[in-house]
Length: 425
Image 1 (tube, rainbow, N blue to C red):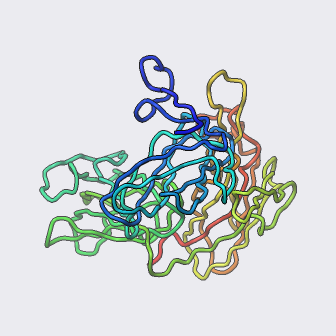
Image 2: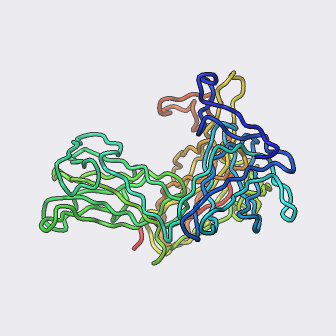
Image 3: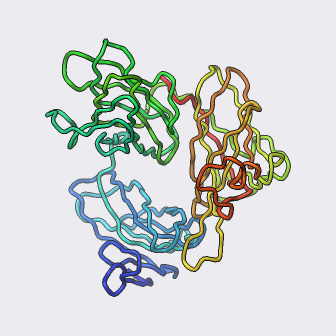
């Protein structure tokens, strides 16, 4: 390490500070010659996934210069975090030689220039880069359940420690991660008795049943069978649920998710600045927004809105993925972050609106995604987004807890939208 500071956290002497890997991290990498260089050894040459554990308290995305073995330099972009000790991970694919290698993260480079902002570094992890899309497995016995559900552990071919038996009124909810917006093949490993092909369970996305996504009875043969459905997921976490349709018990072992790389993927992308603006809604600039622009000042009533026009071939359920930023804070508390979630009222084809909340992104320069299910008709549709304070925390019927001081009359800043049928194939 050159021109930086090593700080200690998570020891008895620093008991009230955030823990760090190995109890230390490197910060203050703000000088032109600041750098941290890691010596690593790998068994063979090839592509490796470099995972950088960092913190960024600058309030905006920051950068460092990455070089491998003194080769071509590139900027690594870090989204903002709550503070320099509140860490997250940035993944980059690098090419390494067999044997010893040097990986450097620096403030500047003679050809590339100076990186924006700063970040603290905790550690790096290194592993071979996957040759194709990774499959993530979610064990049923580790899902969130409610209603009539029992945990069982007596099937030799179960994939993990056990499995669930879902009865009428029971539900298993899986938090499924997606690296990016897109279609994913979800495989449901289960045993469902009954007449072959009969529907035994419904599959939901964000607690809304997905038309055509079901589990079917599969008697005979091996105990565990698999039903596969291709669903459109938004970047980040998605709530996938399984709920029996009747009295027949459903034994659920595992859900697996893999990014689809072939087949139809009917996704439309609309930049926010290309949509119709009304009232105070205005186009603003930001270097990390898609296309360098976003729409802000949506809120303070339905007159200040953004309207999308969406043409689809088939009527049905679609996922509207909203890419947004929100860093509103309520100041005044001594140590709490005071973050505020901002709401949007979303109306399809001038029908009654539904309200959705968009959590704080830690920075006005962090653009996150949140999926909203919508039902569209064949042909041309309009989707209107606004924030009407009349629907806020002071509204009659507001679900508990309704806390006016944590409410906002404004919607988040809007970057772009992805729209796709929730189920395809």
